[in-house]
Image (cartoon, rainbow, N blue to C red):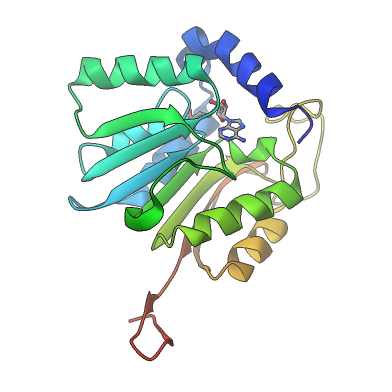
Length: 212
Ligand SMILES: C[S@@+](CC[C@H](N)C(=O)[O-])C[C@H]1O[C@@H](n2cnc3c(N)ncnc32)[C@H](O)[C@@H]1O
């Protein structure tokens, strides 16, 4: 991580009030794909990590049983809470939590989502975060982010080298499969923006994995 958690949190606290006004078309396309692939059902609990002002959490709440949004920036979380109240959504809850310490009761997390947030972590930290997510045993993890399909180009607009640390698709695919996920979809939005969908089979009684 190129900045500490506290520095990232302070940076997003400052941006919080205007964050929703700055969306690029690629960000919107990525967020739409995360929502589409997450596809929760009415009994599902969704954990949205790096939830920010709640773009993903609030979009999923009408279809999910419960949505839990976690972030390090109280300013971003406050915006999310106000939007949930304005929309009359009673099944979504926002609070402090981080990729490697999500601050949730893992027993009931069915789907984990994250959009435009994990690229703040170093590759080793992303691997730890993916292992933490896998330990919650969701059936699906949908990761939309700034990531590299090709050679990293610092002149492109989607990341700021001083604060961001995007991974290649290969690094993320390795970390996800090492953590026991199967990669079931890869969506390219831009050479530096994409969505990875990772799923786990249902453990069968004999301990093998039933993918049916
Ligand atoms: C660019 S915003 C994306 C917010 C939201 N997911 C969206 O799609 O609009 C990135 C968010 O990640 C949060 N963040 C950064 N590092 C984090 C960490 N280690 N754990 C949890 N959240 C983090 C920031 O506070 C910020 O709210």
